Amino acid sequence: MKVFIINGGQVFAHAGGKFNELLTGWTTGFLERKGFEFRVTDINNDFDAEAEVENFKWADMVIYHTPVWWFQVPNRLKKYIDEVFTAGHQNGMYASDGRSRNNPAVNYGTGGLMQGKKYMVTTSWNAPATAFTLPGEFFDQTPVDDGILFGFHKMNQFVGMEMTAGYHFHDLEKNGTPERIGNYHRDYIEHLTEVLIPGRLVPGKLQGEQQH
Image (cartoon, rainbow, N blue to C red; front, top):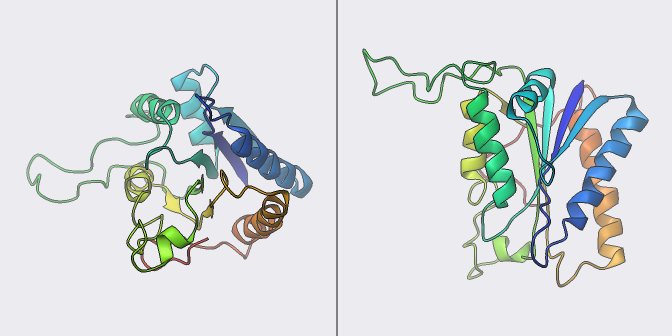
């Protein structure tokens, strides 16, 4: 399996992108140990959109690592997505929105060209996991994938990729203790094993997915 990793941990203001840099290292270290081919893009660096399209076309699996800023992905990651996915139009990522002019009411979102490819997304948060699970808390018991990431998942579905189970890292700003980071490292490597080792692929869900 060929894996393309996108490190969306933007350096901005008080955010140094350090956790997603560390996380990218966990991922590449795992892939090296297991003998996977991989490529990495860091959205803090300049990029060529056409070359990035080729990375998507090359990969069997795309892994996005992103923090969540103001309930969205960072602006550099959004810029990357806008430019690269646009460059992928009729260039191996998607042909059209899937509709025909004869019946434009149906088949929207079926023009992707990346069928057979999979993707995984991790997110990192200041918010604790309980903000998503407890009654009366901020996210109204809506899981990350069904709420904040719903549009992100639809973006990948639009180009034909299939979702695999992601992983969400919580409470990293006020409670990012060495013990917490160590436990996350252990659990994330187990998650990668389940997702990437043949025969253990875990499909993603947009309804009722267990909240990491």
